[in-house]
Amino acid sequence: MKELEARIKRDGRVLGEDVLKVDSFLNHQVDPVLMHKMGQEFYEYFQDKPITKVLTVESSGIAPAVMTGLAFEVPVVFARKHKSITMNNDMYVADVYSFTKKTTNKISISKNFLSKEDHVLIIDDFLANGQAVSGLTNIIQQADATLEGIGIVIEKTFQKGRQLIDHQNIPILSLARIKAFKNGQVVFEEE
Ligand code: G4P
Ligand code: NA
Ligand code: NA
Image 1 (tube, helix red, strand yellow):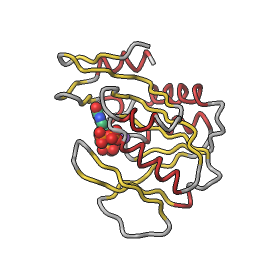
Image 2 (cartoon, helix red, strand yellow):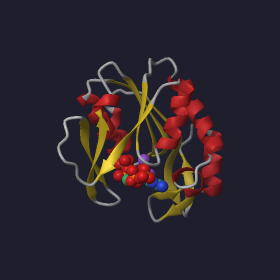
Image 3 (cartoon, rainbow, N blue to C red):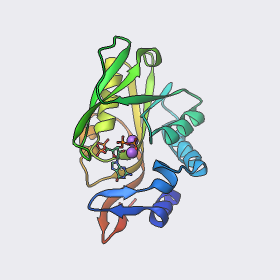
C-alpha cells in the first residue's frame, strides 16, 4: 500500500537493529483516515471469504481490526493480555512469547464470542516473530472455528513470523513489507 509506505518513510523512526517506531499514526496516536483506508484494503483482498468475525490482540491491533470489521460489517473481537490467568472454563487461553520482553503472556478470548460456526480474519499491526498470530491461531483451533486469512499492517520480512505461519496455507496480506533497516532507513520489499 503506497500511502502506508510513504507514511512510514515520513513518520517512522528506526530504533536499534529491528524496531520501527510508528507512534504518530499507529501505536499511540492513531490516524483514523489511514486506518479506514487500510480496512478497505483488507476488505478488497479478503472479500470473497465468508468472514463472520475479525480477531486481533489488544491494544495496537484494535484500530486496524475495527476498520476491517466495519468494511465487512462483522464484529471485531480483541484477545486480552494477562500476566497470568486463573483457570476459567469460559475462556480460550493461549501463550504468547514476547521476544522483545522475553516473557510469556497469556491471551484470552471469551467462549461467548468465538464458536465453530465462525470464519475468522486475523488482523494485527505488526508481524515480527509471529507469536501473536500463533496465539490467535491456537485459540481459533480450540474454538473449532475456521481461519480464512491474516491481514498485517507492517510485516518485517527479515524476522521469523512469516515462516511460522506460511506452511499453514492461509492467505496473508501485509500492507507494507519491510526487508531491512539500512543506516536508519526503511527498505521495502519490491512489489
Ligand atoms: P510477534 O507478535 O510478531 O511475535 O511480535 P514480537 O513478540 O516480536 O513483539 C512483541 C510486541 O512488539 C508486539 O506488540 C508487536 O506488535 C510489537 N512489535 C514487533 N515489532 C515491532 C516494531 O518493529 N515496531 C513496533 N512499534 N512494534 C513492534 P505488543 O506487545 O502486543 O503491544 P501492543 O499491541 O499493545 O502495542
Ligand atoms: Na504493538
Ligand atoms: Na500487536
